[in-house]
Length: 148
Image (cartoon, rainbow, N blue to C red; front, top):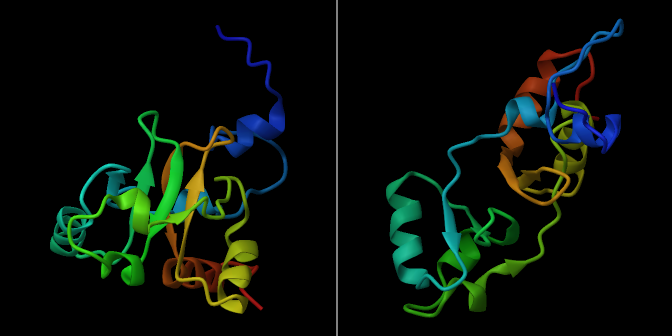
């Protein structure tokens, strides 16, 4: 047995299972892609770019040693430089969302703000996955709460 003391909101934000009488709709944690490429701050951008593109992606999440999200590289950043370290070209401190956010809520935000993708993290900032806008919109549209 484990006595979880951080509270219900933190438990749900971490993406842990829950029970209850109310039906639970899809959340961003359910839809986020877990196979997103990651990189360290000191890796050369040209090596990261090659690895990311070979995997069929155009985004990479820059992580600290404890898997904490520190930055984001989208197509624009991946196209910069040759052997500069990731830290010098990444978008530092990207906006992140917790796994328990309803998919319709974040799909709406992503469409309105034209955000291609967004990191999903635990409450302590560790990467869960990357939510891709097209995935969010598709799932939200098929549920009762779609993007507006």
